[in-house]
Length: 373
Image (tube, rainbow, N blue to C red; front, side):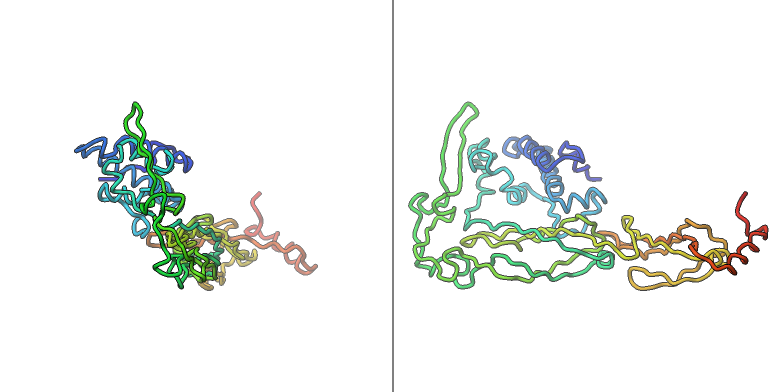
């Protein structure tokens, strides 16, 4: 069965903002949530469809692939998750509804801390690290076949002395007196809609349940240190200027053993000396003389992987495009490549000698070489 259009699944336009997509997903997730529709397989399928659509449309890189190539653009993408069961969705999007009611999950609020709470809630081990954003400049040659880049960046890495804990040693921890080691504080209230459970990380211990009495001397209790790191970026062939790539877990390490953020890589295409890009095709402007156009010739032209010979048939007209098959850019996540299109132009000299003028005047007397009347 053909998959439904992701925009139709969420009921949004293709121009929808990220906030509109997020709101639409939250609305559908509430409507078709399994705890609201026990035993309803149709509702469960709609719940899965909505989660898959949101996974793609909430990510700029995946959304860009989907907008250009549809569902086929996501085939073979290692970052495309897909969902086989409901538990998988709860695990993957456990934080999407957080903060709606003071830090608790919107699922918990509507279902009184039911099964979904146990599925998705995980105790925090530290503060999550922040994301980093870098711009990677690429030539057309690198984009045409894909490339691997090594980039040096400054970021927070795990402290090797305390292994990210922030403590001097294992006996340097004590139980948090506010949450009694649970890492969470809870408040229960009731309304006409039912019971609301507000669960939020403990501010005193940052959700870890422990307080450091003797901090690590190397990182001063932070659990991380800043230094220069070399990262490797595998750039796929066929990317476009403005595309994003997310390197999961490669950003700043979180405090006190918290999970690392991501690195967002923004691709920038550099202008080329010879070519202009038209999707996966490249266009080259070739200039030949009038006599070469009339008599025909063989020329050597640049390509993205060296120089190649090109035959010019006699009588070729200015403005005609000659196609050099698959000399362009490899298709993104697909087989084959674009073409190199060579536009033929006639070079008209600005200055000619007296002798050349006389010869050109003689040519004008010949019927076949006169221009159209």
